[in-house]
Amino acid sequence: MGIRLYFVPTLAVFFVCATYSAVSQAVPAATEGKSPWAIGAGVSGYNSDFENGQLLGGTLWIDYALTKVPSLLQGLAVEAEARDLNYGRWGTEQSNLRQDTAGGGLIYSWHHFNKFRPYAKLVEEFGNTDYGMNTAMRYNATRNFLAGGGGVEYRVMRHLWVRADYEYQSWRDFFKYTVPAGRMNPQGVTVGAVYHFTRPRLH
Image (cartoon, rainbow, N blue to C red; front, top):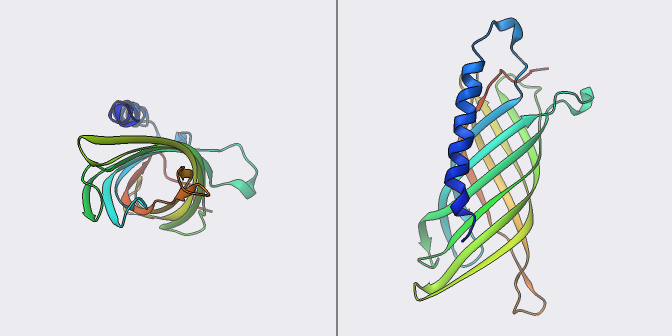
């Protein structure tokens, strides 16, 4: 089946929740700062590491800032992300190659600048790959894997930030028929926008 069956419904649920939260933010300014949620989406370009080529797709982010932490950890948040890479194939990529991923982990942002917020992240994800030389020979492989990366956000409006994100994935033992079993290491960049329901705290 692949996680793509869950990607669109999940996206819809998150946006409904985001809309509800946005409505609930219509309160006096004195109460701002109590919503730790942020939601974003972007366009991704990835080297699949399956063959010598690229895939395009979409990415969804949901962040929840951890507010009750020591001052040293201010900027720490839990992030959930989902990605569907199924478009814009070029190079020698197979015509039916597809990679879907979803997971979550921790993201740490440095809030010491006025409009820029660099960040680093570490997430654990579940990945699904469809591949095959033609439609008559289609294969599927799934793996749990770790991914790390980072990027920067730039504030363009009070609540709206533009995000440029880099991620490096390590799919362990993906090529099981090699000795030793080979890893697959997709990596790529996502450019999108993130809406913080309250203005992020600046130190």
